[in-house]
Length: 129
Image (tube, rainbow, N blue to C red; front, side, top):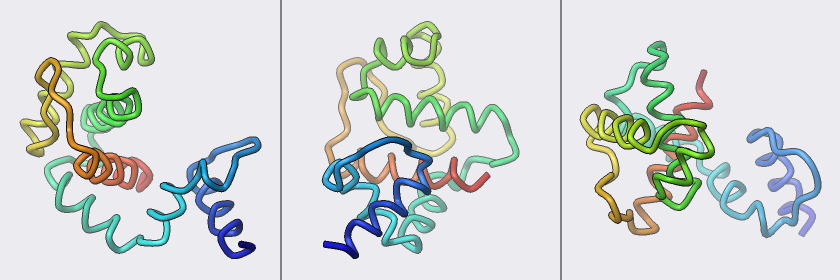
């Protein structure tokens, strides 16, 4: 259990999470942090069409990550980012054009494995800066 707690602590620190968290609340971050080579492969495979130096590409990735974090709901994502839902829709479509990213049609949802793959790739890509 001690080793698991240390791994969770490292994952939380890497993600800049603060405050008290249960180890189980950090399960995904802990498991994914244990596979940095796979994270890099996902990043390069799924997001190879993005340029880390391009601020618009960074904005697209940030919007997509927020969309995944808010249950793939345009309205909740727009509220969290303080933009109009059409802005979120446009940015997700641009990301899809550049990367072949997740579907953004109204009501379309990525299956859980696809959601995790895209979330992990986006998080890794954004963390590389």
